[in-house]
Length: 346
Image (tube, rainbow, N blue to C red; front, top):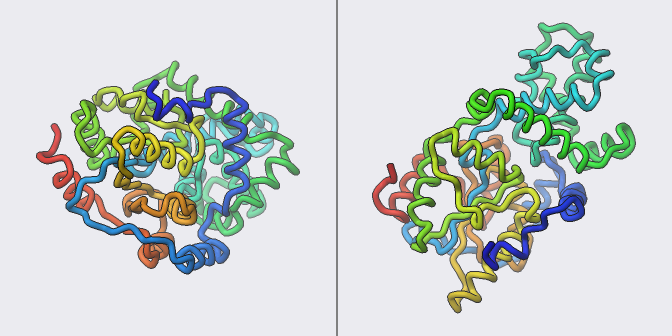
């Protein structure tokens, strides 16, 4: 491991617990009125806004994985459903949950995907969806999208903590382990099927190929910063015919909050090259970008929100109105890749 990654490589349950406790104390996961106030407050702080020069290649191009490189919606929903059944067997039996997720469940979790920050939350959201269906009289002809919208309206860190602490009496780390175990089991049983539920966005594939070509040291250096566990990222890339992502450039769930990873990467670059790096951070969650924008130590980071990931028109509107953020399409990202890396990778 390089020195850039070593301070962040907190392999062990204690470090993961610290990360998850911090995540639980973070802002709500839905774009509520309080979050809109956060966006306005961030702009009012008068932080030095990043200069946006798309033609100038950054030193560090930091990518989220789910929602930027990979569309994992089907896999996370299916694994979340199976983990829910495994973790709460009596609940699943009481509500007649069969071996495979019904369409209403898939539809509901599809609506809820923009509020998911870490995979295990699919288990909690799934419980709320099932309970909402029961409150409406049950039945397989229920409108799944309506169930998802009803749950989204009340979801946030307070609701998540209420479920974990008051209703279930379980630590989030336990659910992370349960969710990961179900994924491992599915991979062992049928790797091709599991990996096939994770499709790469065309521009995500291109960026990963560019990263492989740039591994020798040319700029920009590409990093993946994700709440997904590393082994799952590598398995998805391998299934899609891509080379393994350099281990020292992949920062997963156990490496700390994304804000801290960005700081460590910038510090390491400055120490190595004697100057502050130009950093571009690409995300699909405006809530994550707001956390970066609020941190004075990250005032120079340029923030891009992709419009092909897991976000809503309202969330994109917040980004468009924010002085630090820019919303980009897949076409925009392709043009940037051509400008920064040269000819498209094949």
